[in-house]
Image (tube, rainbow, N blue to C red; front, side, top):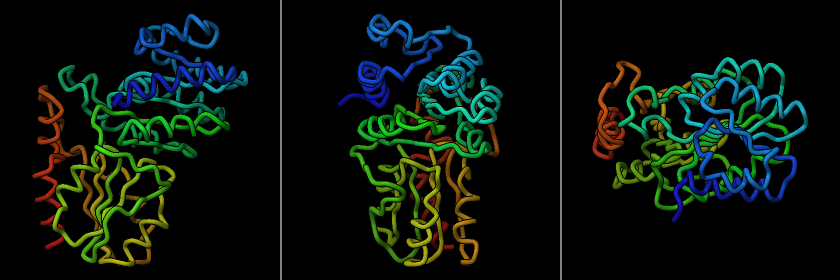
Length: 297
């Protein structure tokens, strides 16, 4: 099975071959893999080099010229380094485009802090009108990319090396388990770990690969059918969606526990993905302890 990144690249080639109104802007990352597409469509596959602010501004310019841009690099460079360009050139100009990152919060842990971006979704969330997709499987990544091309919306598609075993292609929150003692929300590639961590617990498990717009109705229905105790497990900065949970349940007394990448300290280890999962409490054992402690509290 191809990885999310491979699924993105192959699907992007298909889109370029089929749709003359789509352009791809790169900052060296994935340029080699899209070299064939660049030869076939030299005017619509543009590599600006390691100039990430230009990457985003060029994409917005193409959008204003009538093309549908796919703008791609690692999230620390795409969202954090070029955030001003996202804010002004896309949002302020009301330009549409598809920003696609690969690397998630710490997929490239061995590269150090420069290649980590746990705050990317929170940054995008500070801008109105963005759709945020966090697929947990290559099939989800392919479908979400294809669905992002039509129209003129502003889309952030966050790809990861971490994947679930099976795709779930529903819209909004998909209810994968029914329970009475609370609701556990899993976003994107943390799902399999959440399912293992909650095995044997009497809880409802909800899954989403699209987290903005937030499915407030889906969460509310699940919480009203169970105890209104919510555990939110996101593969980026802990609590990024907490305000959306609070708004969805604003008239319902409830408790919330947010799990994700730690806010209280900067984890400066290198190592691998598993080391960072453990450091942030996102491994199966830590999730199980956190969820059980909260529900028993």
